[in-house]
Amino acid sequence: MKKPKGHIAGAQRYSARLADSTQKVQVLYLGAQSNEALAEDLINFQALAKLLLSTADGPNHCDYAQYVDPQGVPTFFATAYWTEPAQYQAWASCEQVTSWWTDTAHLNGPLGYFWEAFCVSKDHCETIAFTHPIRGLSACPMHTIHPVDESGYWGAARDRIPASAFDTLKGEKTLPIAYATRDNTRGQLINLKLPKNTCIIRSGVSWADCGPEQHDSYKANIKPKLDLGMDYLRDNPEESGCLNLRQVDVVDDQGNSAPEGFSMGHFQSLAHLEKWAHEHPTHLAIYTRALAERTKYQDDLELRTYHEVFILDQETDFRYLNCHGKTGLLPVHFGTA
Image (cartoon, rainbow, N blue to C red; front, side, top):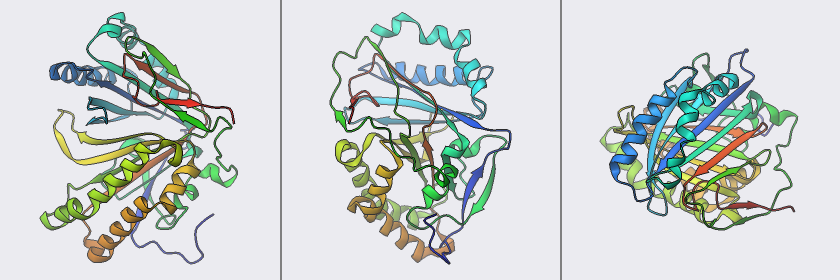
């Protein structure tokens, strides 16, 4: 445990507790990029994705987001969660889903698609949030939200991962990586498997409860520092160990913008994420400013943050269909150190 003796968190935070019957969780990031398509093509995919994800054996919870990637390509994707991997398998193999995914017209169509799926044991993940908003894995039925003492100190995220009590969670010996644009990906289906103990984080912020003063403070004092941190991770994969970084805007079920966003990062290991958080100036700037907001507003702080972390210990299924060569994990070429 990294928790300092006598530590008391400055603000009460909460974590999702999975039901005893849940041993593994399944997550899917299902998205589409425009590839110079008309805006209506991406809108049509949004409707299709929601239809597919609402069919029998669909996920226990879904969130939706959109962003423009560094190549200027508009992208929409869903983050979907199942508390029973067998239910996901039934959904993924149903006729409606397989007939859509295997349609050969996609190879020459106006959209590119990504399907990033992974299963993790429940002792290889952790969440932290306020009591609202509840997003991602924490929003699944059969989960309850409980106060936690492991917050507000360096190493708290590792302490909240049960497996850290018996596992260092070190990345596999498939490193170092090479990071380069993959050629000839349009019109192709490319399948990837991620190494064991790859770390995935979704870190969100909501300003829905912010009045004008605190919203203005977020935009002027926190958001620019957050953007700089995400830019560093995105632009320096070899140095940071961040294999992919998406910074996105949340949309509601109707596709309307919501007062919320999140960043999603794939790291070589939890240690790489921790190193950036603990040592790098860009994260220290975010942390220091957020702490100043907490000190100023105390219990009246209106900005809400959350995150979830997954340490991959089961099978992964990452697919990229007709995508450009810098989509997701496509540029990552794992070595054999």
